[in-house]
Length: 243
Ligand code: XBP
Ligand code: MG
Image 1 (tube, rainbow, N blue to C red):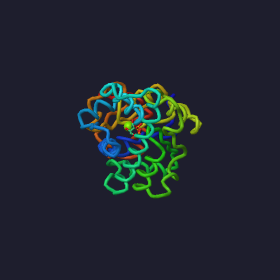
Image 2: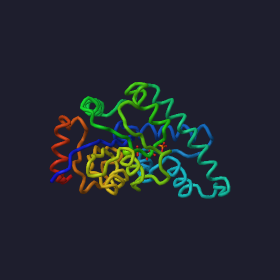
Image 3: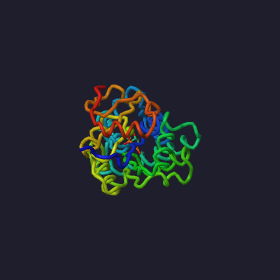
Image 4: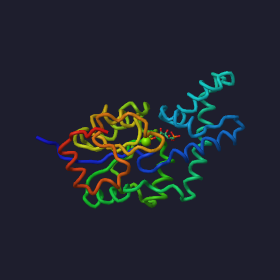
């Protein structure tokens, strides 16, 4: 007996849009604004992406690369301050309108919406970042597409913990096997897998070296998914295709 596909759950960064270059630029603009002599180049940032969450990433980097300038009594306050500046820079960069959704994303979202197939978001990033990215790309009423939006403010423990996906399943009123997740990274894939959700991976240059064994599919872009019927067929047959 197979399980019908009852909802789609989307990661944001790297999946809906290839955002990490812009996140990296925003981190560097914040470091410059705050006179921190830190700079994250693409090679370093690709490695730092193993840490989900911008605040966690800043703290990890600080401990690893600049521990002598860390006042433990104020580190949390300082990380929050840096991250607020970074988020402001990210919003300004996205508002330039140069960060589109990835190929096939809007078409799939529109198809699912027209077919009344529920959708949700499960991301590590902040509500502000989701608002600016999807507002710019799907319009100011972007929330109409999603039954639930689960983000950094929804759960305490970030990916690869399954918490944000479990929260999305709870709000959808579904179990993992009834859904399909869309991710770009190993952290995200592990979070969805721990929540029991079959997952389609569309890696980016930042994550193409990650491990995605047992993913339902690993695709260059979502535009490689012809239509919803294809997803329903893959879900019905639920046999992972080797990456
Ligand atoms: C990817 C992340 C986020 C972004 C930066 O989130 O790990 O931390 O890199 O955004 P997703 P913040 O789960 O959508 O792939 O600085 O807001 O964390
Ligand atoms: Mg991601």
